[in-house]
Length: 377
Ligand SMILES: [Zn+2]
Image 1 (cartoon, rainbow, N blue to C red):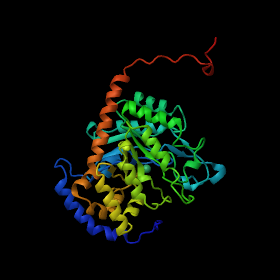
Image 2: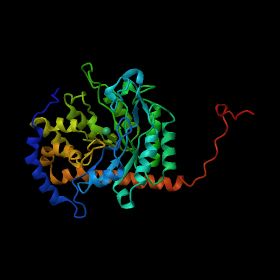
Image 3: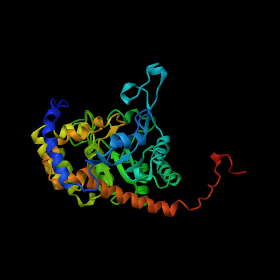
Image 4: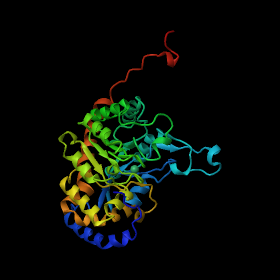
């Protein structure tokens, strides 16, 4: 079913329900932490690598409303091509026809932002590695190098994208694919190191031919090929134009009940996803049924990009008010906080253990190669 993106009066409907949520939340929150949620999906910087500082994020945006949060930039940089837009500097990928390219410096930037925080503040933050090209067999080596260069910082990789409407076709170089051995190498490294994965992959193309969604089977196969790598599928596979297709809930139900896919999780981040879920009584009821059936497989996140104010940051959470109100208190708590704590704490512990073994290892100087100009002399 194709639902309209325009849902008038959404906030007015949401406010009474929000009051109920706050009551429920108070009764179930651990006393040490009165925050409303942990943010499983947060971008500190945008498509031109600009944003807010981690300190500002902690002090003025998270405050006491957000308990813990992921921290990542955006792996892609929008090129400003003067030939294409002249003096108009694009800040978003839809502002220009110029390509996007992978911007690896984002990982060093995020690491240094994390290091600018106090140890108490750092405990609330889970930085993620994103600055790699998932079509490159060397991507896994980049990720390993980031861990070795900035030990004690990162918890996972992502959000990175394979199929994403309007973005995939704009990236310089190869089009990404779920079948790419480079992606398997990345996920193998995540198994070895314990890095948690947040993957954006639209389940379909914006205007597909009728039939089964284009990327469902590839995604299923990918998750099954990596049973020991926990994967969080961002935005439950939806895009801005990639609408909830018929039987979306049934499809997700089928994936989650498969014992071979115990490593698959979903985040319900993004205001567009929130709008879909609360768009009608039936969509809401379907979503609530699904989440109640698998309360440990979904996480909340905002998907906000460098928000300027806390009020703005809270919007996605508030859009979900009718959803929170309909969930059992224990399920609501799991989606907002419990699942984040379980998955990210486990990843943190495993990555720190991997670093403890691997960082001190002396790394041999690589053998000369013809390309280095030093081989064969
Ligand atoms: Zn995102």
